[in-house]
Image (tube, rainbow, N blue to C red; front, side, top):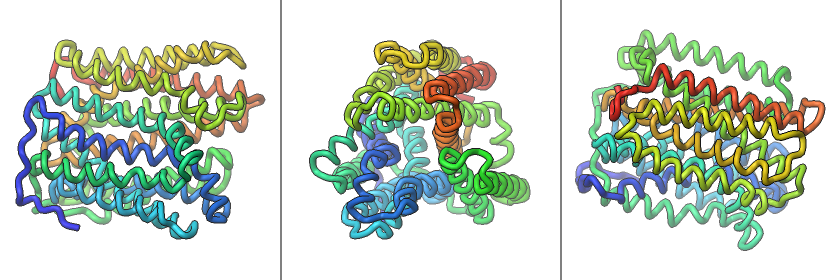
Length: 463
């Protein structure tokens, strides 16, 4: 399917909502698919007679391809036009979702999920780059980035709730079918309301570097996923981590020698770019680690079903939307630094409060810590996103978006893996849960300190 850049789309006006709606719809689909499958996969396994390995690949194959090809998606967007590659990504994702829904067997479903992950990797870097292009005014851009970021928290936390509703009413295939109308609407809105993106056709794709980063991220994500099941000192986990480190070293060496690097070393040395990417890793580590361990706590220790777990996590979800809108409005008066720092400190206080609440606290005592973590993470995401995107020249907006989202995916995978490992190895479930929350609080504190040094203090300043 081709999406020509020759027919112009109307420029986004200052108050136009259509570009934001189009981009956020695509991003919401991608993040929702990471979590909604967790509730459906036991039923899928029974229906399709899938082996344990097949069930694992249904869940993890999507994440591996998604995380591994993000940088490639960003480079293609910069070269061919972010609007074009974004639409390609949405189309691939939507068609693959239809294939997942019609899958006759587990092997077919695994392949379709891998293709879904590729579509996600193509569209996510372009989503931020398109918002950067569509909303050039700093205050409008901050609001757009805030709503974009809130989609991740809402989709991740609402996934179990939506999955439980669909599986228990109309069947697991609807977990994938719901993506079809959203994907079609997303492409139509993008082509009608998002302006054409600039292209850099003379910028060559450094395929050796792309292959190295794909291998590195895929190996790291796989090793972290397995660490939650096997333990951190399992030979397969250690081998995966070692090979991932080797791939990243080869990527760094290649980037220093390449005539047209995917990420110029000068960009990576930028305090705003490198620091912002690391802040994203830290708060995703803490937030998704909290969501994962809290989900296990509610289901395995408190006996909640899938729907009950989704409702129990809802306070954290509700806060993400409110915080993102508020931070977008405040940024033009305060600048991003105080918002990012205060958000990280509030989230740290929330997880520290959970860790201090005791081994078996009443649910009412956990509502405020969850709300604080959800609010603080989303409150900080707007400024962090603006910092990373504002530090990159326009020709590298796709690559900057890809770097930011790659580090966040690594943070999420690390948080989930470490949370699972702590729950599995602690003397008691309650002790493991409290330790996990304490580690998350420390990650938030580290992100606050880093934000104080790396996020610009000047209101509206992003360089």
